[in-house]
Length: 130
Image (cartoon, rainbow, N blue to C red):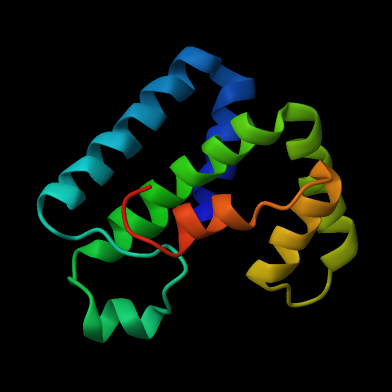
């Protein structure tokens, strides 16, 4: 869901320009900040069962969609456009017609970037509030 959210912003970036996308990212940040204030922050990588039964019921959208979109934007800034888009292409080519895991995506980004992204992933995906 997070990558889908971010992918939609890429469409708007190329169709409507970076200012439009900045407004979209600002709305993600605002919604995520409101979730933090409500005590609804959580791990992006938590299971759906976690969000259904253990977490604040309003956390899923704010965390998975908004924080998730922010994660991919932060990842893009960290590794740069060339590595980011090459990693997405590599991920697609390596996993098309298969069921891919989040670890597959992380591995592709690390391989393309040439460095570990473990700390970055831990901060964003496995802990509340990066």
